[in-house]
Amino acid sequence: MALTDLYVAIFEKSGGNWAARHGQDGAGYQKSFNEFVKAGLRPATVSGQATGNAARFASVFVKGGGTWEARHGLDAAGYQKMFDEWVPKGYHPVFINGYNVGNKDFYNGLWEKSAVGAWAARHGLDSNGYQAAVNDWVAKGFRPRWVSCYNVGGTVRYATWWEKAAGSSWEARHGLNADAFHAFNLQMAAKGFRARQISACNAGSGDVFAGIWEKDGGPATQVHVGLTSDTYQQRVDALVAQGWRIKHVHGYAGAQPLDVMLRYTHQMQQQSNWCWSATSVSIRRYYQPGSTLTQCQLVNSRRGLSNCCTSGNSDACNKPDKTAEALAGLGHLANDQASSSTRAKVASELAAGRPLGIRIKWQGGSVGHANVICGIDEGDLVIVRDSIFGDQVLDYDVFSTAYQTNGSWDRTYFTKA
Image (cartoon, rainbow, N blue to C red):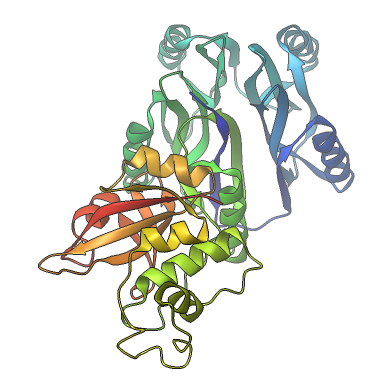
């Protein structure tokens, strides 16, 4: 199962001084760390993930906090040594992140010297060991402060810390697949709980999620999981412009992209029967941003005409055409599939940077309609660009069987650069 860099992010509608980075190698992260600490910030979370045989780091830095120490890239022995050194000095964990590079576990962490209740921490627990620890701590009145899941040698492991403290209501879950996580997160939001912290890792058969939710009355939050690197950056750019900040980010090597948005622009069709041309030209310009191809030029080429840029609405020019043939002629057709496609295949294509051309069949109609899927959100929604109906975010099943009420997805054009 091929793995790719994915991200979990929690955004919060609040201000404050903060900074975030992702996709950094060790040297790049250390440079950012030095700059941010000099500016009076400290890490709020640092996660590691394997990109090939190298570690990459995602982080959020914030202003404030007491005396602290932070480390990244520690192997298990180094992490335990640091733990043993700082605990007697009055430090406690703030965050613990485990990750895997080359089937070996590594750790990032922040320790703070401040007053807390009794606490306990563990790392390297398998699922059964973690559940046993949870049962024990809950019975003793502890509550979760952090849980990080990671895969080492094919086994899902957990690093976590808990504190014996009163406070707001809380819920925690681990080992949830994508559908179960999505459903539980919606359930928590409906009950007034906010996501405190979420992690994810690949479990071999798919990605699993762990998280902590609290009913603390804090600012509004948004949770996004399974984001590709570029989609994460797009989310950050859009939400920060709207007054949100990154509260938490967790990078992981995952197999199931759930939130993908390509930087794709779709043209509106210039004539009533040119959806195929608008789609083909838009895909050409996506793969070749410097292209100057226009809809009427493509029509001229397909029809063997020269007047469609001045007489586009003429009967000779304004005709339907086969999108597959137009894409093939431009060199952008990888495969023409006479059916819809699965969610997993759509996600895989988008994660690889390839928009999907779609043909819609209208009930009772002899002529189809072409549009493009350029994104997915949480695995259940598709982001559609349409040369008549514009930009839409639709439920996958609705798009597949009831597009614009009486349309169904009956053909898929897999594209290539």
